[in-house]
Length: 278
Image 1 (cartoon, rainbow, N blue to C red):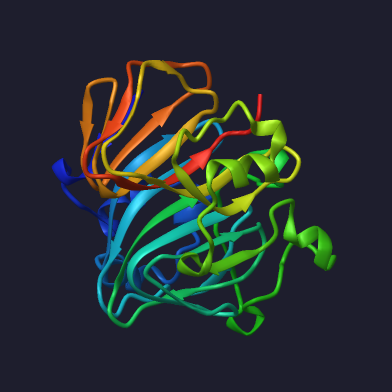
Image 2 (cartoon, rainbow, N blue to C red; image 1 turned 180 degrees about the vertical axis):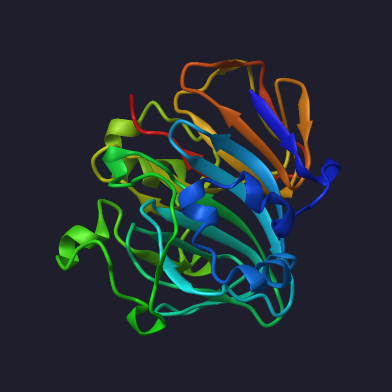
């Protein structure tokens, strides 16, 4: 199990990490003379990166007044869970704390913020099952914001999960019984009293992003992970295989991997990216 305790990490300044971005990303950020001013307001802590697929996940903290220098689209799915603050995306809407989006490739947008915002931001990278290509950034005119640069076919543009934009607090919590009733093929994915909100889901593979609520004094004995998890502790704390994970910790597991028990005295709220069914 991989663990990243972000509270023990220093924030990286966006200006300092531009040189480490893929060429087709860093070369399309906007006018070179304005990059330092803009990206000095972009702070990040890397959670996970896969150079082969170009998947990347970061905890970001954008400072008041941040604004992208151009509108652009990505060849990759982009996904974001907002923790706090405000973010307006051209051609879309303004997002606030505990809002979420899953954007298929090609949709043109730019981000601005008045108060700044903190969020989990993912470029999904190359994944045919999600219709996602490699991470990239392609500049397009502002007047095209909200349109798709890759296809004129509206249905094809949405990909398998659709273009999801939601306030997660308006979604119901699903009990284990309700969840298994909706997805009987996942009966092996036992929640054991845990509740879940499904934020986005691939209807073919059943890979999903979700909020998971673990109750106080929760405990299960040693077992194995039925599905792979990439997950961030938003609130509370938990212990997995004798490893204490406080709020703002990230962990990754793989399907079939053993664990030596999972527990939480305080209860916990987790954002989780859950892998496809086996």
